[in-house]
Length: 89
View 1: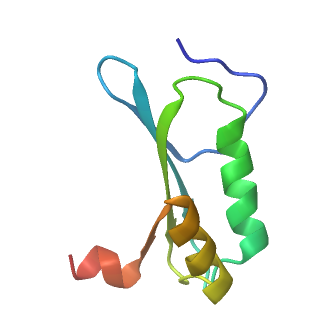
View 2 (view 1 turned 90 degrees about the horizontal axis):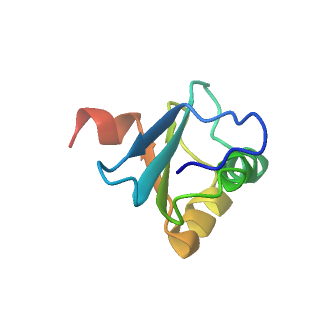
């Protein structure tokens, strides 16, 4: 069961068949690197969905990421994907 408290700006939400885990993702199409404020905004949007508790988050950004975003994502286990990742997998 998915618990929604309010609207969320989430571009991709995928559940496993049993609904026990989910992937949350956001897509940023911009020339400049995504900032730490944008990173936190994306993750706060995922926090309003209470279930499932087993979840992973990804952010896709055409402009890449500020250094502090790369550092924070590494600590929090958030997957960051930029254009190079999409074309050179």
